[in-house]
Length: 354
Image (cartoon, rainbow, N blue to C red; front, side):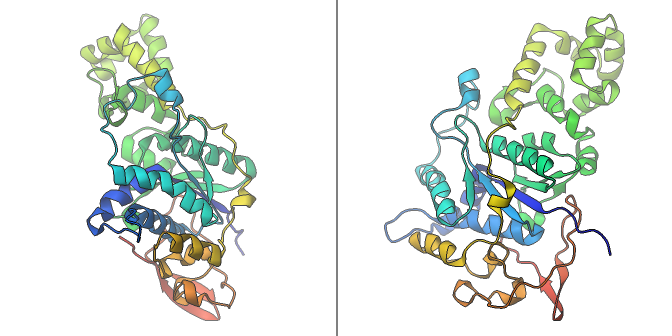
C-alpha cells in the first residue's frame, strides 16, 4: 500500500482573493440589512471553500496586508504609488474580511508592516520545517519564488478556482523558462508595473530568461560583466540590453526590485496543527449570518463533509466523513470528478462556484 502524502496546508492571499471576488461579484451588489456591502466577503468565502474542495487541505491560513504601515513603502515611497484609491465598498470589505474569517474560526494572520505575500512565505517555511506540503492561493506572481518540491502555487486566473493552474517547479520552468530559485532575479530584471517597479530598460521576459539560463543567477551575470566578459553577456542578450544592465540606472533598479520583491518568511505563524480543518459548523454559520451571507453546500470541504453528503449548514451530516483516496502530489490539479471511498464507492463531482 503506497505511503500517504504529507498533510497539506492551504495558505490564501486574502487581499488578492477578495479583490478578485469584489470585481467578479460586483454586479450583484449584495448588502446586508444595514446597507453594508457583502458581495466580496461572500466571494472570498466561496473562493476559499472552492480551493479547499479542489485540494482537500488538512489546515488553512489566510493572510492579509497590514493596513496601518508598510515597510516597503517606507523603504520606497513610489512603491505602488500609481494605484488609485480603493473604492469605498472594496475598502470596507477589506477591513471586514479578517474579522469575518476570525469569527468563523479561520486562522488569519496580519503581520505588522508586511503584506499577505509575506504570510504566504511564512506558511511555506512552516510547511517545510514541519514536514507538510503547502499550496499558496494568490494571483500575485511574486509567490512563484516560493515554489519548491513541497510548495506549489494555485495561481488565480479568470474563470475561478477550477480554471486556475497549480504551478510546481516543472510547470514554472515550462511557463517562464526559469526555475523558482531564479524567479526573483527574473522579476527584478523585467520589473512589475502593478507595483510601480520599473525593470531594466530593454529587458523583458524572454531576454531575462535567456540571461538567467546562460549565467544561472543575476549575480553571476554581473561577475561576467565586471570581470571583462561583457562580450559573453552581449552574445546572450544583445549589446543594448547589456549596456542597460551594466548602467548605473540598471543596477539600481535591480537592487531595489530584489529588495522589495523579497518576502519576509520569518513572520510568526501558529503551528500547522493549530490551523487544522474542519471548522466548527455553528461558529461558521453564526459568523456568516451576522453579515447575512448565505452559503450552503459549497462549504463542505471546510466543515468536514463530502459533496454528496453535505446538503447545507442546517442539515450537516452526522455520519463521519468517509476516507478519501490518497491525494495527488501537491503540484497536480485534482480532476473535475473523482471517486470517494466509503460504503461502496460514490462518484463526487467538485463544485464549480464561478
